[in-house]
Image 1 (cartoon, one colour):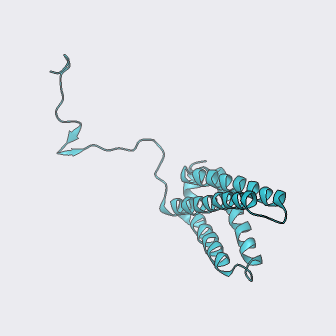
Image 2 (tube, rainbow, N blue to C red):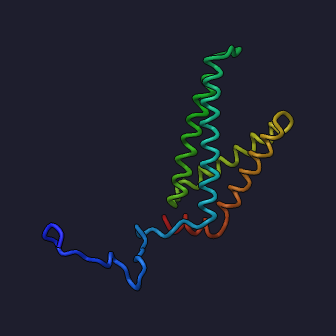
Image 3 (tube, one colour):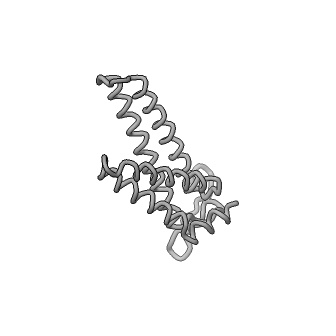
Length: 150
């Protein structure tokens, strides 16, 4: 007895192992939906990092139009934070996150298409990430998880 309380020495063990159970009643997030959430989070982080880079370049460098460069940085920051929020919603199986995720991929494909002659490496990466995200979101498991959560 420690501090007047009886001690239990099995620490919740049954048959020599710890009992584990789900922390919540929500079903686990299926793999394709986790992949889509990770890819959207990657896009959001890339946009936020680009925003910081543009802001630093605008403030330290000599852009032809500093106001436009800072506006671009602000837009990219808002986009990045929004995509991170969408990724969080997907990871939590929130149905409302699906439409913004699809729209972001649609716009990413448009950007990739129009930059195909100038930024080839970026175009390929952006296009592949967008397509992979669309495929992951469109799987039956991801669609069922998002419907089930509604």
